[in-house]
Length: 188
Image 1 (cartoon, helix red, strand yellow):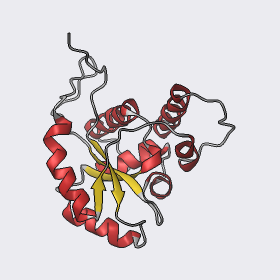
Image 2 (tube, one colour; image 1 turned 60 degrees about the horizontal axis):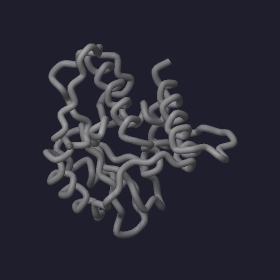
Image 3 (cartoon, rainbow, N blue to C red; image 1 turned 90 degrees about the vertical axis):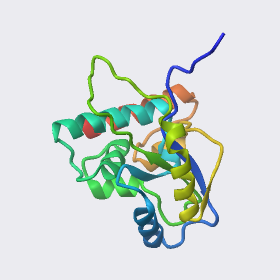
Image 4 (cartoon, rainbow, N blue to C red; image 1 turned 90 degrees about the horizontal axis):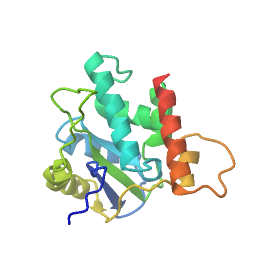
């Protein structure tokens, strides 16, 4: 009997840089030059909490794209803004973008479906596999390697996106809920 995970993998690849980021401008320039289009984004490692977090951010982005209500001009910046829970682009880069000294990050691909129907959202399970070669080439180009991991909610991520509080004794589900709640603030 086949056991299926209820949420498919988001097209996200954990990467480890060969050395900690020293020249951020050079890294971003390389990433932007090599990527196929602005549906590829580079996110700070700890700000991605789960597959649900990524798909929820994706849905909010696609809804804003279709309604022509994006605050940012491009999907890569809009996803940073949504995940970081802010209306301010500058704050989004500071919270969710990679920064000097980071050793790991996420390369993500933001799928674009033809039409978004709230009644029946169909997520193609092969999106991850279809973009795997492109992600690996992109990682190599920015002097990083793909690492075997999937998103997991961590307290450091809450702090990085600007959530303050006492986070002792929280389980993974509670941390993920805080990420999702904070993300919804970008919609207000």
